[in-house]
Amino acid sequence: MTTVDGQAGAPGAPAAAPRASWREWLGLAVICLPTMLTTVDLNVMFLALPHVTADLGPSSTEQLWISDIYGFMIAGFLVTMGTLGDRIGRKKVLLFGGAAFLAASLLAAFATSTVVLIVARALLGVAGATLIPSILALLRSMFKNPKQMGAAMGLWGTSLMAGVVLGPVIGGLMLGAFWWGSIFLLAVPIMALLLLAGPALLPEAKDPNAGRLDLFSVALSLLAILPFVYGLKELAREGWAVLPVVSLVAGVVFLVVFLRRQARLAHPLLDLSLFKIRALSAALMLALLIAFVMGGAGLMASLYMQMVEGLSPVRVGTLLLIPSVVMIVVGNLAPAIARKVRPAFVLATGSVIAAIGMVVLTQVDSTAGLTTLLVGLGVVYVGGASVGPMTPFLVMSSTPPEKAGSAGSLSSAVGELGVALGVAILGLIGTATYRGAVTVPGELPAEAAGTAGESIAGATVVAEQVGGPAGAALLESAREAFTSGLNNVAVVCIFVFLGLAVVAFVGLRHVPALGDMPMPGMPPADAAPTEEAPGSVQPVH
Image (cartoon, rainbow, N blue to C red; front, side, top):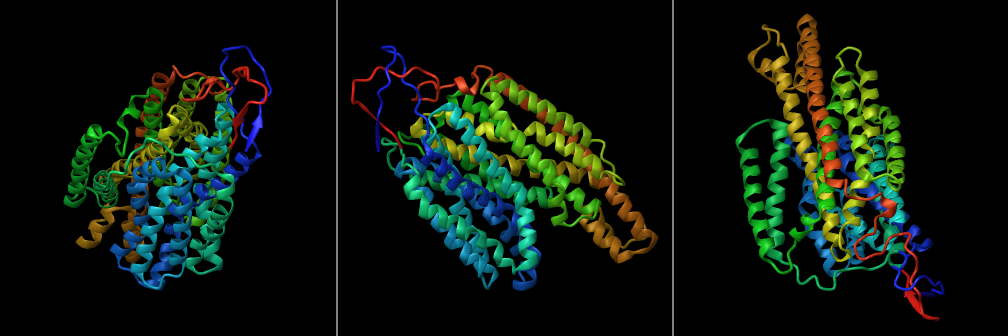
């Protein structure tokens, strides 16, 4: 569709960045729903696992694969799917991923065996890896005006956070009313809407000079990411052991081989030249650090509410609604402020506020700490909320349009890696603190004492079995030890947030306010339109 531009401006002045029409905003609404769904699916399985175990009877190892395989496959295929979108078209990849997600969701919902469920979850992960990079790249194509792109990114970030917040609540309600497979049927109407409305509302975009997909690089990327993420998860779960360490080393070795190959290829799977863009590199570091903190500290806070305060997962999700809603509101306000104020100042200030929230979390105790925990998390969420929606905007707005898919996959992959690192490293700090602080009654049998000394979950089980004064003493000591672990994790997070503030200020202080920042290949938002010959036309998506 074309429109005649009859506006005249000063000769030689840059053309104004085109503004999005109702079609683009409607398209944004359509792609925000799958975004929310991917994060809901990431969390809701933990609630459903007891129901699945009662129905299908998976072994303990199979339970771990049911929970983790979705995240593994998303992390492993993000880079590949983002680059694939650059090569064959982002809309094609998104619609294909939506159809695959719908089919895999139906397979998972009606799975009759553990193997089928694990396979379905793996397929969901592969399909989910197509969604976020393609959506970010499409947003880059749809909203060329920086001010409008900032608003669009804020709304998209809201859908991402809403999935995290609403996942436990929606999952709990559905599990209370229907069978466990019903949680997967949420995808059916959402993906159906994407498949029906997407072809008409979403533009197609790709890199015309992308070259062929290097399958050997795809294999190397999987061999680098999957063992590394698996090793991190096992470290968080079991502590130091041979298998996770070997997996981490193998992942690092394959990563080095992968990066050396990318540096030699004319058309690499991952364009390393993107890291030379200062704003992009700084934004990726910010995304890594915020995911690190939110992943690790979020897990510790959730476990505290369940294991120390004795709350159900649904109750935990409900209590977190208020600070999470505040986070969503602030997350939308921050990009609006950054249109007038440099992002470096907004992000650095938010990081300092989040560090103050972590100071509050160091004061949580094991007897009456729930209110302190919620207040501290609220302050953390307010401060950290600016980072979530602004880092993808900074990544995408500083990226050449033909590399948008690759940049989108980097933004998503860094977030996945940050969560895995946070859960592993901060989890290990919490676990080490617990094991050093817990006091196990001497009269317990050796095997029970060993179980109680490993984790608060084990101590809770042993305390219920033993009962009496010994059980009560063990449970009290376990709760105090776990709370000490939470306090220590909060101390580490204080320094991470202060480091995040430094990265934001040093790495982004050259970036102007978002309303004044032109995107690569596009003029500034408020530039005067160029002089056009009468009847000239300009393409409009």
